[in-house]
Image 1 (tube, rainbow, N blue to C red):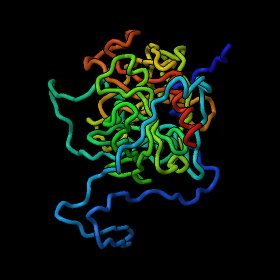
Image 2 (cartoon, rainbow, N blue to C red):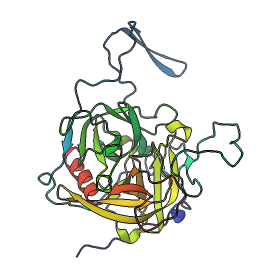
Image 3 (cartoon, rainbow, N blue to C red):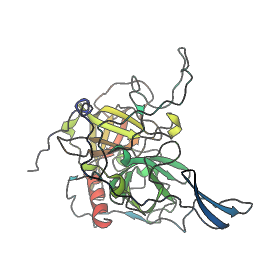
Image 4 (cartoon, rainbow, N blue to C red):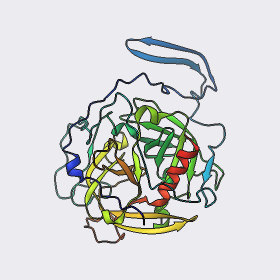
Length: 367
């Protein structure tokens, strides 16, 4: 009989915890400061003046080349042959040396000084249930530094480190230009992305690992497998840390255990991350593919375009890291609703044993 795992700590209790100071000193981290194509560029010079680094060069009439890779990034579709057993249903995280831990992120300074519009017909985009409980944050402590912006050709979403070289995001965020097993267009991840840049640079993905290639509009079966792991060019997880993982248990439904993070487009145009606590998963439906079981996790937490690929996590006991249980996937009806116990009209995370298998396979093969 499988060991029953106790539920996580209620989100409101986690929010009361005090910031944890780092137990050791951190060394210098080597990160990617600039990664651009050199085609058509000549006479490059680097200068450091006034506390800033500048890179200048001569370019032709067409300017600097667009972000491109030589060919497509390899994409690995997992099958039953790759994952014989689901294996561990939980995996540990890592808090990097010299980094404090905060259990809720610090609010970002407001930029729009004009008051909101007044009147009965003021519109606001996205899928909001009752009041919008999210806020924008600016925080480089752990674990908030593990979240960031995923960019690819023609679109963007949210992501989170899940291993030393690994980033977790939604499958439908990926630009599946190469067809099945044919690879994908360029993909990058910027941890701590805020107002156009991140403290640790923008890192390119070298591989994409997935169960399905999810389209923009998803069925419940596709939502249950709407996640991929990106293998990055650099070991960015060693720098910013990464959360653990645990397979969701439907016995945890209807309690406010969860925190959710992402880059919603209607808040600061996706330029700043947003946080929501006291999240509730209302329902769970399971679906199968490639011998694996994925979950559709229905919820009525705030979720709008741009937040796709962001993770939902909870904190267990005195563990120093949160554990991911799902990935932001689909948006339901725009009407104001309350939980109904079904996945009709709600927002949805993807998760389940198949997510555990995906992360586990990626960690085992791309350490």
